[in-house]
Length: 95
Image (cartoon, rainbow, N blue to C red; front, side, top):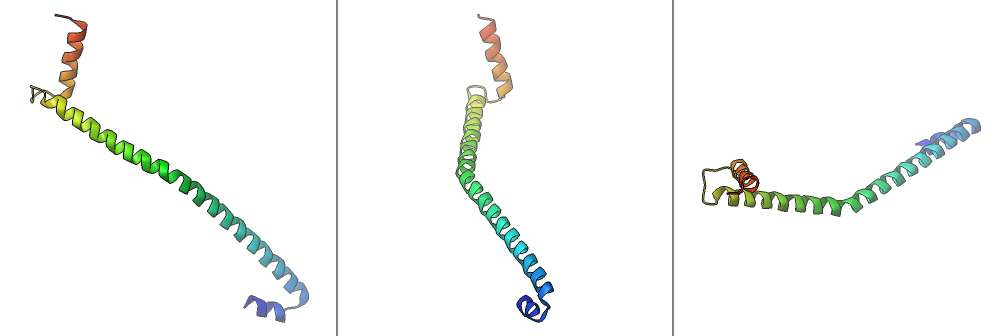
C-alpha cells in the first residue's frame, strides 16, 4: 500500500516518505538488535539462576533436616531456640 501511494504521489512527497520509511526501518533494526542482546544476556544468566534455585532448595532442605534432628534429640518438646540457649549456657558456664 505504501509502495502504491509512493508511485502515485509527487516526487517530493515520495522522497519524504522514503526517508521516513528508511528511518523507521533503521529504528526497527536497532530495536531488534537490542532485543537480541537482551535475550542473549538473559540466556547467559539462566544457568546461574537455575543453580541458585537448586542450591537454595538444597539449603532449605538442609536447614529443615537439621532443625528436625535438633528438635527431636532426646527432648522432642524442646525447640531449637531453647536448645541453642542451653548450648550457650553450657559453653560459657562449665560444670
